[in-house]
Length: 149
Image (tube, rainbow, N blue to C red; front, side, top):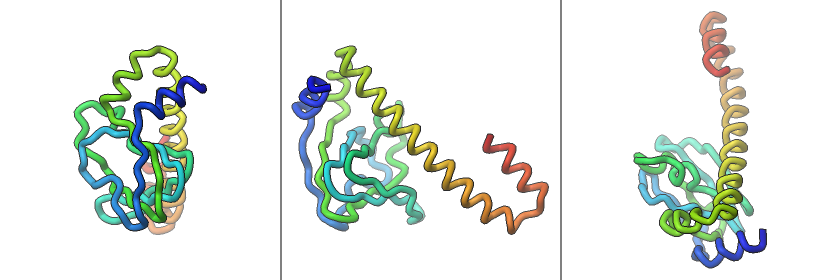
């Protein structure tokens, strides 16, 4: 773990964003991964719906990093407070990932982050679906239940 964090630190740049500053623009095609050190970030869809709030220890940009031929970021991420983060470029991560131990640790971290986000998204979807189901006929609710599983 010590070597992993040393390599990551050498390959990254520490950036500071001020409250209200956009950190990731909707549609951007850069494939940087950002590790939040301090502060809070809020992510919004194109229609302005808040979909995530991220804080210290969390990463962002992992989906764009993993996607090949990305259409660009699906969310706009804004510093809710002053934020300090480590930014690692796609190119640097590609070079570092040639080292098997680094790659294993890095991709494991991405998998955990994506899994946690997926679980959060499912919880959010279930809350919305329960609210929505009170407004729908039963047959349509059953259709939604079957499509999520």
